[in-house]
Amino acid sequence: MIYYWWDGKWQFWRFTLYDKDEMDDLSMKEKKALKDMLKRELEARR
Image (tube, rainbow, N blue to C red; front, side, top):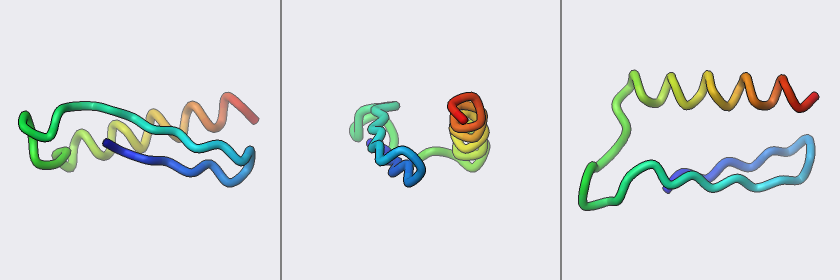
């Protein structure tokens, strides 16, 4: 479960990307992809 607090709009986003029994953590490549996706989404909402 990944939580993201968006200060600008007082929104709280929760992502379920995988079950804990499937994976311990995201890889660095996956973390970067998620960060880039969030950045694009936030820019589109401005």
